[in-house]
Image (cartoon, rainbow, N blue to C red; front, side):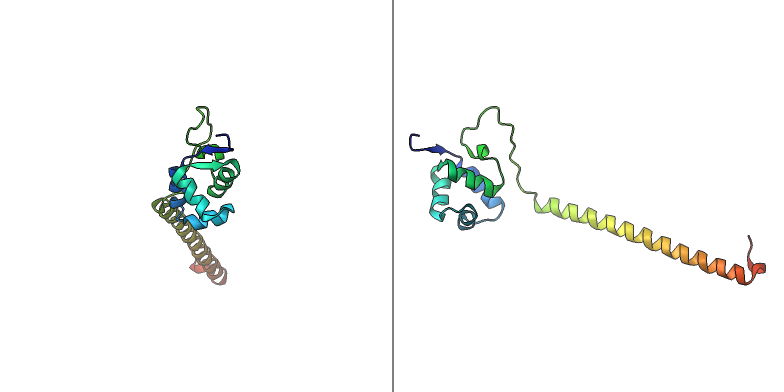
Length: 131
């Protein structure tokens, strides 16, 4: 690789790009590369250091994670974006927590208002109170 290019995993780039719902053109615009360069990266797997760094930054992964043959001591892990089912579950849990908080707050205010009303009634006519 005398010309400064290295082998990268073109399928990994395509997988990460498609997981985000991005077109090759969109990824190219984020990287500052041409769409043809992104096509070539995915198809041939040849990339300069600058192209690999730009693509890694746009995909929010470590540049070493895009190499075809990663070093054995790679401490980086590649994570994929959360699925829509995970997002729905998180939103459901947040919604339920807010509902419980609203019910507790409403119950507290109702109880407080009833206690104030009873206290006012007892002050007006202490004979009616059974305390």
